[in-house]
Image (cartoon, rainbow over all chains, first blue to last red; front, side, top):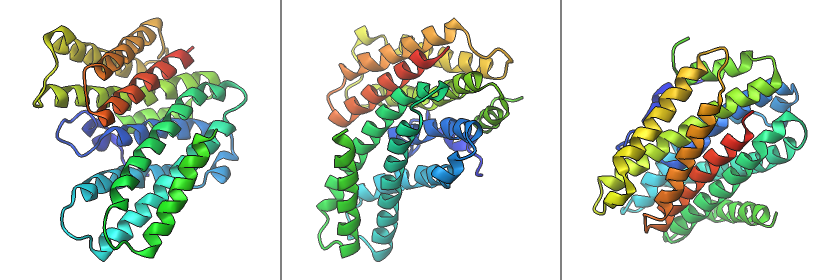
Length: 159
Length: 127
């Protein structure tokens, strides 16, 4: 596991590239550690959850920077963006499933927070997609992944 | 144990009592939102349209700093939860809620709304 202290403290640095999405991601690390301890089946139900969160702290900054980019996107930009969107979608699915997972017992105390996180993450992803949809000549793979993300957002909003 | 986010995460795995572990992890989980609340307030106040004097920006930053320091000081103790933490979290939730009414940008309003609700939810779950 990566050391998290440096980026954690950067959350309060007014000049850092970490914003609210990163704070939301960081707030999930403690829950993952706790739930891993509570139930041995957690790791099987949510494989590599902590690794996903670690990747997403970096991807959050990348997506923000890319959304500001004025030059034409390179093939590498699109490839990284598609991977980041897939991770975003996976995180939303994990948080929604975690909400259901925490239905009974002491762990139900996490539910309200998880519900808020789900709604917030969906809003952030939807806003990002609006920006990226406006980029001309996107690759087909982007359109497919973006459509899947929208489906995940909508599905969850129906709850 | 020194104060570090990695140490807090490690301690979570070592707490055997589930209810205590959930309380501890919830307290750790509140810290990123608190740090982000401070950052967003500072950025707003250093921007083109700083907070009105009535907002009492300096006092609010002081409240957030005290809350983070107090929670972090408690997280290294055996009895890491008390009523003062809950009250401090509620105060910070209110600060984020007041900030919503003092900004115009919709995305920033959404950020403050999430922080306010997040901290409130965590505070209400503590026992």
